[in-house]
Image (cartoon, rainbow, N blue to C red; front, top):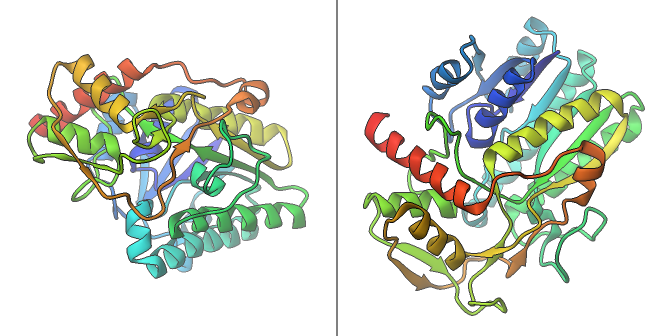
Length: 335
């Protein structure tokens, strides 16, 4: 089975590429490197010991995407490509709406033309908006507090409508919680261009003294220590969830939604302390103002994925912190 990974050189895409290759899939990666590095492809080859077919491509460019589908006969698509920073989306909303929605529309048009009927979409827990209760279940109401979340929400609706119009389509919507960690090899991990937008890469860069301080956005939330609570999941566990989702898509038609999380909530300060303890390093921090679009608590009920995908997260917070630090040290010293 040949699977296209849009945005496959990115953080989650690259880890999913490894798991798919190890599961026996033939993969093709497409990426424009807007938030990833070219040498990721070479690192993937080192990990998998196999050639990885790659195209540099912008998935908002229909002619380029059409040519890709003409050259490669795909059986399925995993759609990762998209801008992904909550705070940035509030500053440049038009860029987020245009890029994230156009890429999905272009991709779906090509899929329709070339009769590719299986897609797994990289969605987000941000579609739950401000939760009235936790843990979050897939049948709870959806609403968003920021443009990034709305692009995920809108793409989910587009995919649901496409599946409704074509009974042969299989759409799996994966609502991620907060991936951290890195591959045990230390060859791939979260490596953002510029200043990190996510918590763990910021922590690791503070720990290496590349950045002076971690800013903790808000300490007055209604949580145990006043800082935001999230469901942090090891990126390798998340990647394995995509393998299960692809398997599911080949056996089922229509649309299914799955939370991919651990079911446990940790605060920002929990993560800081766990990282310091696991790696015996110091992470100095300051309290800053809340960010627009952030919510107090967000963690998953992953029972549906356990039941239907036969998937559950296996790696604990200590492993997430150790693998993140191992990656950062390798990245700093070798790349």
